[in-house]
Amino acid sequence: PSVDPSVPISMRSFVLNQLDSNQRIQLLRRPVLKSDEMIAKVKPIVDDVRHRGDAALIELTNKFDKAQLSSTIVRPPYAPDSMALPLDVKDAIDLAYRNIRLFHDAQATKVPMVVETMPGVVCSRFSRPIARVGLYVPGGTAILPSTALMLGIPAQVAGCKEIVLATPPRPDGSISPEVMYVAHLVGASAILTAGGAQAVAALAYGTETVPKVDKIFGPGNQWVTAAKMMVQNDTDALVSIDMPAGPSEVLVITDSTGNPRFIAADLLSQAEHGVDSQVVLIAVNITDEHLSAIKHEIDVQARALPRVDIIRESIAKSIIVSTNSLEQAIEFSNDYAPEHLILHLENAPDVVNKIDNAGSVFVGGFTPESCGDYASGTNHTLPTNGYARQFSGVNTQSFQKHITSQEISQAGLTALGPAVITLAECEGLSAHANAVRVRLEG
Ligand code: HSO
Ligand code: ZN
Image (tube, rainbow, N blue to C red; front, side, top):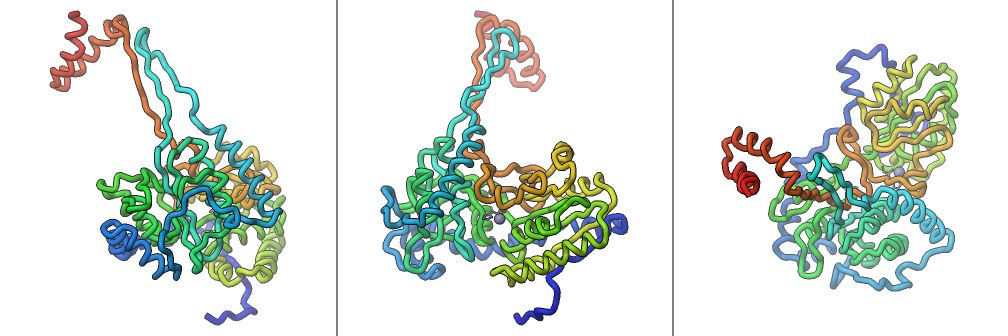
């Protein structure tokens, strides 16, 4: 589509106090995901891979990725040539690996939790890795080795036995050396050179060569998301997924201390992900001049970016909400439940304990989201679409199950048993009551 370059790249503006409740609800809304429609489209693909296995996978990879492969699975040792990188890129990946590893190591449940609820009644909980996991690393408009790190590191830390990293191949059939290098670092046991719904189906059901996995992680386009939702609902597949995914989001709250250049840069870093990226700025008590300076920076910086065409579309759908109350700003943000929340506020650290819903929080003017996207240590696979109300981002425990256990002594049963008998009789389940009685009668 032709764009008029004289039209400013600007967000729509609203004043929080002037919104009626319907308008407020409207602003909190994300684009509707046409999941039923997408599920109807991916079903034939998923069924095909499920029934014809590798043959279907190879045909679909040829059709969608234009790559001609005789096998879609690569096992280690990965060829050194396939992961040859410029030194600065390798060093940057190594630094990111180190930080993400440190943060995810600290999250692992290592020692069992043990609670003696009554004398002689010992309850405990211990963790085990999910044995086989599939990690989806999108291809498309950008290569995403960072996503391979964000999914591979917690899988490695948790001790998953089979780590299958799926990613669409390039037309020559190869995978980018960055992703290959990360696969090597995280100890991926196989690389599935396929993308889209066909990759998800192969992971969920397995094929002659692709191992079936127990849980599928990772972001993806609508095809990938619909396929994940579909296989999760199939009890034959017996597979779970990390979380429902939607377009990426950032919400920035600023006050009069916010630096317009920093704020604009943060908003644009999210806007460049895709035309559906959700970008929100809440301005607390700032002057018209300050707001104009932010808008000016957005326009100027956007025009200098290679992905300006994507940004033009996403920024046009984005919003600035002005308010004179920090409390109202926080309330709006908690209601929105953003994937990323950036606090460009004078007392940013003090605001953190008022945040109830967000995927990840970036505190203060020197904490760009980009650092969390790549290398500070936190995970960038986060809940979108308002799901931050009930979901956490991907973390080490996403790759673990927690098993409870108990051990009761004879004295413990003597103390606890009568209550269990009473409750069992209450429910009319006498066999349950008997299981205690036979022991107490000794
Ligand atoms: N911001 C994205 C993650 C990402 N950014 C990957 C750059 N690369 C998640 O919302
Ligand atoms: Zn990003």
